[in-house]
Image 1 (cartoon, rainbow, N blue to C red):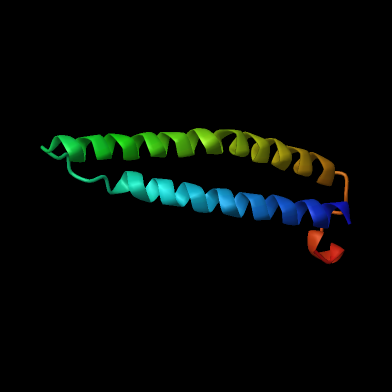
Image 2 (cartoon, one colour; image 1 turned 135 degrees about the horizontal axis):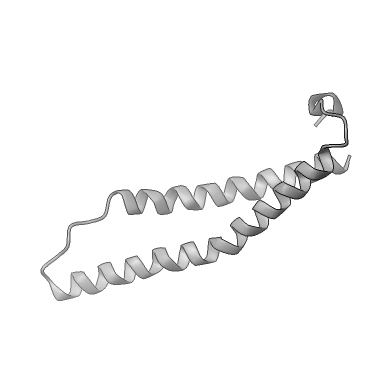
Length: 88
């Protein structure tokens, strides 16, 4: 039962983190052209700072998910390998 609970929590958290990263990746893939207008440049700098803040915010979440994933793998190595038989 431990496995089922932690697997769901892990997947819920990783799914939301992946959605955030997809949004950030999309913004970075299609950057706007550099403007010649001072106000537009300030706006673009602000947007770039927001992307940086988003990535900094996600870094500890990523590290936690990575560690939890390792822990789940370690705990499951001695358990029944057929997870589908556990009914999760």
